[in-house]
Image (tube, protein in one colour):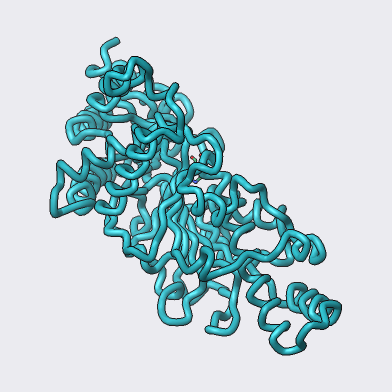
Length: 424
Ligand code: PLP
C-alpha cells in the first residue's frame, strides 16, 4: 500500500507530514553530513542545542508565547504531566504557606510545622474540571498523589448527561474553590480537548480568568497548535507531541516563569515528607528541567527535531497568520465533516452536544451504535484507504481524528464516503 493512497484518522500517534518523514529518514542516517545520524549524536552537542532552540522559537512564533513564559521538553508523555503539575504546584503552594506562617511566628520551626499541617489539612485543594476521560484520569492521579480529600472535582460533566461525557455544564454550575489573591486552590485544571469523548472547550473558561485567577493548567495534548491560544491565561500548558506536533517520545510544557526560581521556590523534600505530601521524581521537577534547558537528562533529540520541523513548516506556510492559518483549515475540515453527519442524522449520531463538539476528534455513531453496521462502515472506509476511524475501546463507535497533518483532501474523501454510505 502506498502512503499517498491512505488517509489516517487515528487519535494518536497520528499522521505526520510526508516531507518531514522523508527528511527524517535522511537525518536518521546522516545529520548535516557528519557521518552519523540524529538518534546517535549527543543531546549536549551544539547541533542538539540548535534543534532545541529552533523548536522553541517556532512554537513561540506560532502561539505568540510571551517572554515571561518558558518552554520545556520532557520525556514524560502527557500522562507524566498529570503528575508533574501536581508535584510542582503543590510544592509551590506549600512553600508559600510556610513562608507566610514563618513570617508570622518567626524561627520556631516546630510551631511553623504545626500550623502548616493544619493549613494543609484544611485548605489544600486542587480543582479539576472533569469533562472527559483524560481530565478524569488527571484528577484520579492527583487523588492518588495527594489524597482524594484534597481534590475538588469542580464539575463532573457525566452528572449532567445521564452518566456519560459529552457536555460541558455551564460555569454557574461549577463548584470551584474560591480564589482570592491570598488563597485559593494550588491549581485549577482542565483538558482543552477530550480525545476519547470528542469534547472541546469552545473558549477559555471565564471563571478561571481575571486578577485573582488560580494557577490554570491546561492539557492540550490533542489540540495543541490547532488554534489561537491566549497563553497568558494559563500558568501551565502541556501536551504530548504525538498528535498534532510530532512523534511519540516527548511532551511539551509552556510554563509561566513566575512559577520557577528565583520567582517561586519549591518546598523542601524534608518539609513535604513531614507533611505526608509526595516528593516528585527529579525528571518531572520543572525548576530542574528549566535550569538545564531541558537537558537535565538525555532528551530524544530526534523527536525534538521532528516537532521542530513540523512547527517550522507551519511558521513558513502561514507567515504572519501564524497559528491562525492552521486554525482556519482545522475549522473548515471539521465543519465539513460535521455538516455531512448532521445532514444524515438518521444514519449518523454525533456523540457530544453541538456547542462543545471537538474540531479535532469527531465522535459519532452509525445507526445508533448498531455493532454490525458500524463494522460494515469501518470496513467500507478501509477499502477506500480511510484508516484509523474506530472509536476508543472504552466508548466504541467511530472517531475521525482531524489533526493538523490530515489534509483538506483527506477530510474531503471522508466527507464523500460519509455521503456515499448514508445514501447507499
Ligand atoms: N491527554 C490527552 C488529552 C490525551 O489524548 C492523551 C493521550 O491520548 C494523554 C493526555 C496521555 O498522553 P500519553 O499517552 O502521552 O501519556
